[in-house]
Length: 328
Image (spheres, rainbow, N blue to C red):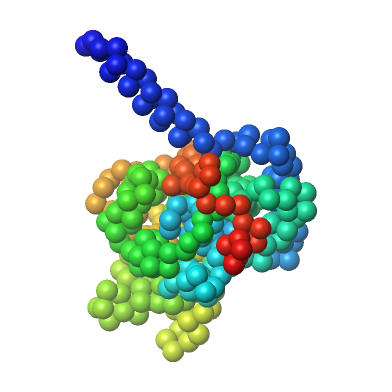
């Protein structure tokens, strides 16, 4: 196939444009403006982790909940104001997301050294990577250069975030809408290898699964008994339960062995093994056997997720306070 000269120039320009858009985020973005930002983030998280073992899971979750709504723009951090309806009040986030004070501490420490340089969106990306690593998981080169959004989207938070009640097809649809494939779905779900969940998000599995009046048959009998003891009928729905019963605060591949044993805490977890697509179950079984494979793929999937619609260049802003749009 031959191209005329103008058409060839057009295609070369298009290729360069696409390469430029992909290169807007870079692991060296702050090398000349805030070279020690990663160390600052890590130090603050380590201090917080000493008194709160849950914080690393919570910070990782914040990054997920940011990127799935409006892209990775720090919108999840915005408080209510005269111009902002906060995502924090959306059903999946209200009285559930935590770690905002640690993000504030990171931002303050970064501003002391590099004022007006590092975005809150990038702080979330860096905090997620350090949190996973500090819990025993993989490390990866975080791509940076995001700017902060000036709007929030509570409706998007309600509709777009994966829910603990979602079945496989619903999860697949939500991930696909953001350009994340089945491997990303199975891999990023592995973040439930640490952290906690309240009784209310899996209570129906214990007593009235799908309105049947019975327990979810996919739960092992011993695990069901354990969960009923932790979450009795007419009990406190805010009681916390480990997402991983074996290594609750460690990032490892136990999440996948739990699924093999029918001990996935959330419906959205266990559904991965009952999915109609065999590739999902195959991925779960591979990760249960090969932790190194899970770690490598998790690192890449976090990079993929971090590339969802970032604001770059002159779009957005660098917030001085992660909770407020500048000038508000």
